[in-house]
Length: 97
Image 1 (cartoon, rainbow, N blue to C red):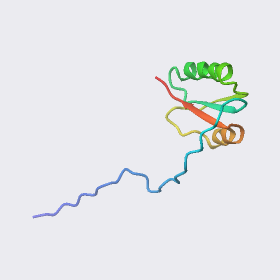
Image 2 (cartoon, rainbow, N blue to C red):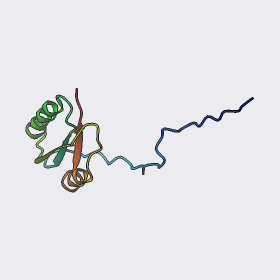
Image 3 (cartoon, rainbow, N blue to C red):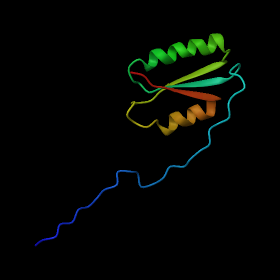
Image 4 (tube, one colour):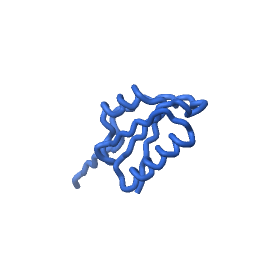
């Protein structure tokens, strides 16, 4: 009689990412800079472009920073995240299909 060994793999990441608290709610969007991050999925550009018009015309947003991820399946680059953090009061990450 032979004995077999089964190795069970855990698909979860080995490290735990840092948890961060949510930012407080902005009292108003008027005069603020809002980041729009497109994930490049089909129609995400249509959604975010329409949202940009609404933010500017109806909510008096001063500036919109519109950036795109390289690919919807890849994490956002550190440079893009840093640019959004440095310039924006709030960010909307748009996804679509």
